[in-house]
Image (cartoon, rainbow, N blue to C red):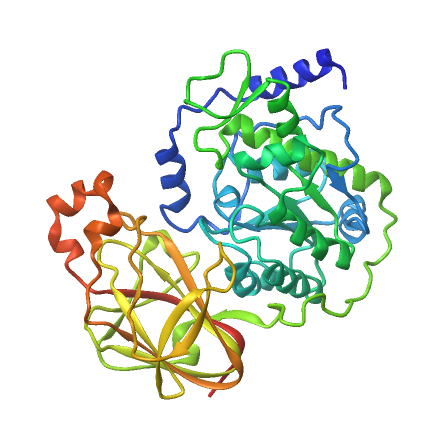
Length: 458
């Protein structure tokens, strides 16, 4: 690609939408403020990105492509596209609305609708639990899966992929990156977290798009700043202000990579059905992971009430709330793991775990970067549900616990011990707790879903 063409493409993308004056806090707050509406359409201000003329065979690995999706779209039929991932998917600047608008541009006569199943700060572990409820029950034709930044856990990714394929949809893996990983792409390498996900894509014949490849090369050439101040745009594209969450121009670059991949797959598509389901790559994959409305599978002690939070209605129509230490719920299941998908906030407290009549202690994560923890028998140590993001703002959060294969009875109780919330928040976030200590001096659990790696039992 010539320097002139590269510069022209950069200027086109930069001119599509003015640089957003968001700082890191604004971006994170926007992605964590609540649940995004599930169905969406691009806003009127969403730019139509150009696929451009950047070419690198390593950017999009077509494999089996998306033949069924393109056959249906070319026939003029309505199609539904799902997006599942972390905060970059949930946010409105990351890539998702731009990709949908590009698809609508590719097939202007079609009715193309889409689902936003992005949940900030979550990886493939929770993704495998929620893909059925938040995406697959709506019968999408195509699912874009983005989990390379948060919890790129290959066993969890295989669980998502197997569920998507079993539902009859096609999948495309898309890889976002963090700032340090640009050096890997610039050196012709694939970042370590992505390597495990690529094994899954190759095993199932799925297309994958390395969305950070072009930005990494632009950074290497001095034409892009991956992380900088919001007004630092002179002579280069500013990708982000925090090294992770793209500003509009950065999101346009991500979306342009997907657009090039779609054009590549569209041209090669044969319309043939996708291959049959192969044997699992990982014996302990998360294909059996699901999430359940608590009252569907659990019994509750006195001390619980059902509440509604409008900002989380698309995730949790009803939330189980307990504010009394000792309040508990219990359930039985057959499988290898359980967990909770809950809501944080100033009131969030701690819980204790009991499995098969024995108190449990939580051990370090199975794999760094995930919320998948091991358990061992011992004096129950409270599990904290308050974290550094709970300062005067609710957000979705989760935690999963692994067990040996078998039938298990689980009891989860609201603990009487209180977390040291001032220490957890740190000196930069103490204003609200100093002004409103009564909000924090509580022990509350807001339970949205019970997570299972297995099957619930009555």
